[in-house]
Every structure is written in structure tokens, then in C-alpha cells.
Length: 416
Image (cartoon, rainbow, N blue to C red; front, side, top):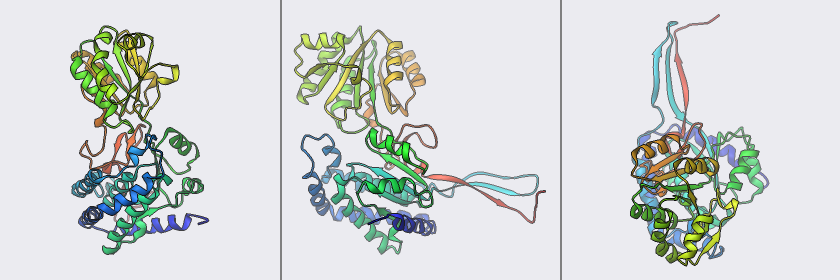
């Protein structure tokens, strides 16, 4: 294929047709997709295994690529959940009559054509397609070569459902995996209304610097958990372990533990057994290194400056001992990617200050950052976690896949 412009034009035409479907028709379409996906679980696993076979077993992204029976069941439920959500389009946001006698309405309308560029995550294919179809948006999917077989088969199932419902299959378009098509997508201002990159920091930076189409960044997650001196250390240990090892390859996993100096020596031994079980490599500052070295922690490294502000996406984390609340917040201000940040504390004043002062899409008190997720937040699913502040922040889900339109009704009025 020399150019993807014909595909983009077809997607734009399909977006027009999508807007003619009723709310119920779009909901029914997603139920049909959920049933089709469930019925083809075995085949999806076979196609996914083809992708998995091409990736190094030691690559932390392999977990993100995996589709097993449990994950497919989760995707099926997500499709049903999205189908049950209220239609975000057509909502009247404002209604008034102005003195010239004109009737004004501001209503929520679909964005149009949503382009998403992503890596190694075949679940994103279903998440994006379902959210876009539910909100009457067409979508252009630029998945990575790592998930080629999985993505191709999943989109074929969606196309079967679209065709059975008499809907133009161009409403969900999977682009070729070749990188040469990325630049063409990023400059297709005539056909694509918004681009959303989801993946590595390098991918997001490339899109930000090269796209002529408006973009919404789903940023990298550099997530901190600060254990304040009054925190319940047993709860803190459970939270830190969960945030690090439950699924380290995702963006809401923990990267840096900050410890008040008063509790560091008591706290660190509490996570050692679980961290050893998962072979977690710790990059420790001078104070925490001394404590961990003394108790014989086997996977210990001395932290270098670039180990703070680093998204590990692996069984690795950095640890820093701080003098107190102010130094912890200063560290987070310096190194946070503004994704998800947590404090473990029994001091209500400290908690309130943390929640108010920390600038991130999601802030937590006494809970794991692993909860930052569209499905968990009862949004059905997400296109990604937006770390920017315009249009959408946090889980970018159904409610944000709309823009506004002013509808003005008159009776011959003119303005000179």
C-alpha cells in the first residue's frame, strides 16, 4: 500500500453514517461484538500466541501483549458495560433564548474520526473501537507490529458485526503496521479529527512533535507512593507491594517509594519477603541502600540520578528516604509525570494537603495507584490515561469522546 489516504477517507464517510444510528442500535452493536468475541475465545488465543511467539520472554511488554481466557472474559464484560452506559451524544449542555429572539442550544456531538496509535496492547483495539462506536465516532487504529495477528483478527470480528448490522465496516479501520504510515496519519487533517498516542514516552513525544492533527496525550506513568511517618506500616507495605508487583508493565504501577526518615528502618523489612518473591530490583538512595544492604536484600542497586523520574514497567523500582512531607512533595513535583500519586498516612492534615497540592490526574490516600483505570472507575473502558489538562484528564473514556455544537433557530433575524 502506497498511501492510507483512501482508508482515511472511507473512515470519514463511515463516521457520517454512524451518526445516523440510534442510541439503541449502537448499544446493540456492542452487545453483538461482545458475543462474537466470546464465541471466538479459542481462536483469539491462537492468533495471540502467534504474536507472543515473536516476542522475547524477558521483554516486560509481553504481559501487555497477552490475551488469555481470563482477559478475554474481562474484555467481553467491558463491551457489555460500555453498551449499558448512557449515550454521551445529543446531551443539551445549555439552552436559552437571546434578546434578538434566537433560540440557542449547545449540544454534545461526536468528535468525528478518532485516530489512536498504540503498542503491544491488543485489548486497546477492542477498548477504542467499542468506546468510539458507542459515541458515534469512527476510529482509525494504528497498532504495533507486535500485536499484528491479534489486532487483525479482533478487527475482523468487529467488521463481521458491523456488516451484520448493515453498518459501513469503515467505521473501524485497522491501518497497516508499517511505520511509514504514521507520518501520513499525523498530517491527515482533512480526514482525522483527533490523534491519541498510547504507548512509550518516545512514541508520545514523536506524535506531539510531528502531528498536525490535534492530539490528546495519554502520558507515561511515573508513579510515586509516599509513606508518611504516621502511616499504618502494615497497610503501607501491602499497598507498595501491590502497586509494584500486581502488574508492573502497566502505566499505573509504582516506580518510586518515598519514605519518611523516621519510619524507613522499620518499613523496608516489611516489603523484603514479597519483593524477593518477585525478584524486584531496588535502586536505592544512600539511606535506604544502607538499610537494605544491612538486612541482605539480594537485588539491590545504588540509585543513580536517572533512576528517579524513570518509568520502569518491570519488576524494578527506586526508593528514596526524605526528611518529611515538604521534601516528598518537592520530589514528586520534580519527577512526576502527573499520572497517579499516593500518600500513606494517618495524618488527615497531611492527606488533605497532599490531595490538594499534588498535580496529577489521580491522587490517592491510603490506596494503591493500580486503581487508575477506566473500567475500575466505572467508565466501561478507556482509550488511555490523559496526563494533560485540556479536554480530558485521567481515564479518557466515553464521556470525553464528544465535542460541542451550537444550534441556533431563528425566524428571519439578521444582524447588521
